[in-house]
Image (tube, rainbow, N blue to C red):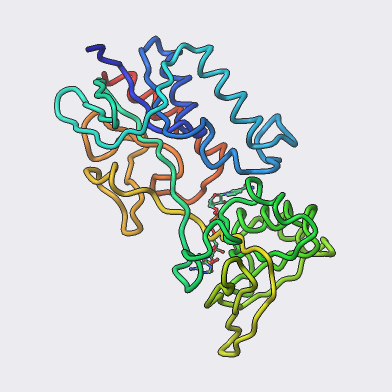
Length: 297
Ligand code: NAP
């Protein structure tokens, strides 16, 4: 069986950058991805904070990165890694195969959080969505709500405002976590209504969403909407990273060289413990992880 120098798990911006840098260091590289290359970046309608790309869709940026990965010579393996074992060579198990590598970079990102309120699971796919760019077109001319106060929620509300009749953004605090420039755009958009200090308690509807019940300081009221977009952040998927040391919130602890607690296992991107989660910081992590892996195999 071929033993790769570097196995990268996850083809988001961190993983794709790691693959490019490891290839350029002369290493044989396998890049594993269960879905499409790009990770959560592909859901971004517009990215306007990645240097030299002042207005590009997440899909197009992902495509450009992937073309660079292919040109660099990485093997793209479109399979889900379900387990890794370290100690000597690393074994990576997928549903259909087993692979070996000298080092691994965990670039597995985060999975989207759910609200855990009544109606969310039952109406999933029938008005409840986690992706405005995927599902927004179904709500053309309709009324929708976006839940969350971070960059994802505000970006999704702005995207939906161009398609929908009205957009209600629902945030549990009185100020946004999102960048100031995005929050300013939100406030300047006529068909977006803010509902601050409001906690969603139930999504209503029989066969499809009819509304969302909010609690504002103990007073409940219902907003009639056709769709609810949940954008309340993410958390690393825990099963694959079970063996590495993590912080209290479940993010992988790394040192400055992106080493994890396991020998020859590195991590990069949104799944690591850090303050700033941006495409550009994911790329930076990926470059460092790859160069560390390349010098340790
Ligand atoms: P985030 O920054 O973690 O924000 C999550 C938001 O959801 C917060 O406002 C949080 O409220 C709220 N929330 C969490 N749990 C909730 C619950 N149970 N009920 C109601 N509200 C809840 O997540 P994100 O927006 O997905 O962003 C993730 C990372 O990607 C961030 O680092 C972000 O900067 C980055 N990102 C960047 C861009 C960009 O640069 N354009 C775009 C997308 C994402 P509190 O504020 O009260 O905690």
